[in-house]
Structures are given as structure tokens and as C-alpha cells.
Length: 435
Image 1 (cartoon, rainbow, N blue to C red):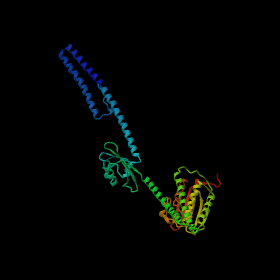
Image 2 (cartoon, rainbow, N blue to C red):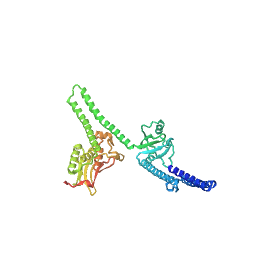
Image 3 (tube, rainbow, N blue to C red):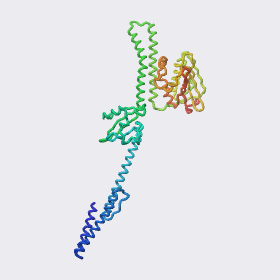
Image 4 (cartoon, rainbow, N blue to C red):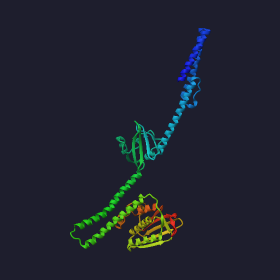
């Protein structure tokens, strides 16, 4: 601007000097005519540049800055630099906006941006999934017309957004959402939604677990407490009474001990993320141990058979495998009526190794099989407790099998017996005596 003024003053001084010179040489009239001609040319020069500037301002672009002469060259050059700077700023802002948009699109939580009238300005794909919205049709729509849950309407009407609202999504009854409204300027808000279905399920499992443990311990504690109270109220306790009470108290205390031991084993398996350090497991010795334990648990009420079709050993954790296989054997004995048969088998083929326990017991209805490995899940609760089961055996088996990258297969028919098999990959097979 200063350069433009300097140049304009210079041109005015030049015109004045030429006019004075013409007056001194040619007289007053020729001097006035010359002054008018010079001023007209100067005015046309500026009008031409102003016209070009006006045309450019209608569609400003750094690529199409008009060429200028004299002082206008500096003006157009300044406009060019300013236009280039604005283009660069616009590109940076567009890139930043695109990054923020991409970040919002990639967020695992739902995001809906609302204007001052609670109409949708923008939403990410996760919000579309959470609330069953349409990104094409629902932009600009009133949010309360799209989410018709009464609890959500009450949440919006209350205007207290410091705490999230837990809501069951309308498009999937088994999806639980935690939603919260966050104002971020004078009028706009963001609605954030998070899928907490898995967390709710875990919390439900924990609540059920505590309730089940409490229920399992209540009966033996009540029995033992009742016996102790009865004995303490008696002035004299004869040996016959003791022989009647003490075995039942011992049985209930053993039941609590088994439950606590299984809980400790299950807790260790669930809370130890470290990979299992495998060692070679002598399957001959393990099967013989399981056979002896099965005969002791059966006390002659069943026929226990051992069919070993392979001399191969197994790579794994001996203690964990003993625990898992032992639970399968003890379950088979508990659920097989007296006179039935329990068969232990160890088989190896070209693709896998399989330990299986087959019984001729009461069997399992098909609808119960998918839930057998849940903690405290029982097909027949009364029979399970009376046989001494804790309801945790198959949950322990599931974790041991997973830690050994194996799989548990269950084949059973109601009243026709069951076969529980643990199938290992070929990489777990070890030659007998291999170091």
C-alpha cells in the first residue's frame, strides 16, 4: 500500500511538472489540454486494473492472478501471496478435518454430533450400527424421533449428562449400550455410545458365580452348624450319637473342601496368562493312576476298563492334564448307575491324539451339551449334589484343554451314556521315553 502511494505521488508530480513545462513553453491552453490528456490516461490505466481486479474477485484463485503494471504489479503480487497462503491454510484445515473425520469414523464407540436443535449433523458408522440409523436419510433429522426409548427421552429431558445412561439398543435386544451426551460449545453436543454387552455379561457371570458359591456353601455349613448346635445343647454325648453325627459332618466338610480346592484350581487357571511349560507325560503311568483313582471312587459299584491303543506319550503339563482327565473320570462314575461300565481310552492316529472316557450312565440331553463347561451348570442339580459334585469340574477341563490348544468333544444321548474326549494336535505327541 505504501509503495502504491509513493508511485501515485510520483506520477502526480510528474504530470504537474510536465504541465508547468508545457505552460512555460506553449502557453496556458496547451498546458491545460496536456494536463487533461495525462490525467485521463492515468485514470484509464487505474480503471483498467480495477476492472481486472473486479473480475478476479468474482472467482479468486492464486493460479489466475492478473498481470499488473507499475504500482498494480506490487498489488497483484501481494494478492498472489495472500491467495497462496489462504490456499495452503485451507488445505491444512481440510487435511486436519479429514484426519479428525477419519478418526471419528474409525472409533470403536458411536459418535453423533447434534446441533442446537438436537438434529443430527454427523454420525460415524458405529453409531449407525448401535442405533440402526441411516447416514444418508437421517442427517438433519431430530434425534428424539429416531431413538424412541422412553429412558433416553427422560435422559434428554432431564438435562443432567454427567453420568452415562445404560440402554438396551432397540435394534438388538441382547445389546447393551452405555450412552452419554457431551456439550462441546454453546449449542452443539456429541452423543457417545459404547457397546458394554460383554462387560454386562461378565458382571452377570460374576454375580451368578458369587450367588452359586454362596448357595453351594450354605447347605454344608447349615448341616455342620446344626450338628454342632445339637451336640452343644446335649449334656452328655454318647458314642452312638457321635458315630451317627460325625460321618455326616465329615462328609459335609469334605464337600466344602472339594469346592474350595476346585475354586482355587479354577482361579489359578483363569488368572495365569502365561503359556504352559510342556513336559513329556507318561500316558501309561497317568492312565494307570486314573484307573486306580476310578476304582477307589467307584468302590466296586462299576466296571472300570482301560483300553490303550497307543504306546505314545504326550507333551503337556502333567498336573493340569491329571486334573482334567481325573474330572472326566469322576464325572463318569458319579453319573453312571451301579453296575455300569466306565472305559478309559488313549488313541493316536496320523493326525491327532485322543483321551476319552466313555460311560453307560444317564446321558445328557442334547440341549444341555453346549453349556456343560459353564461354572456350576448342572443338568440334574439334585443328583449332582448328592453324588458329591461341585459343578466346577468341566469348567476346569475347559481351561486346561484351552491352555493345551486342544479341544473337548462331547457325544451323549439321554439315558444311553456319554463319551467325553480331549483331542490334541499331532504336535503334542511324544515317543515313549523321548527326552
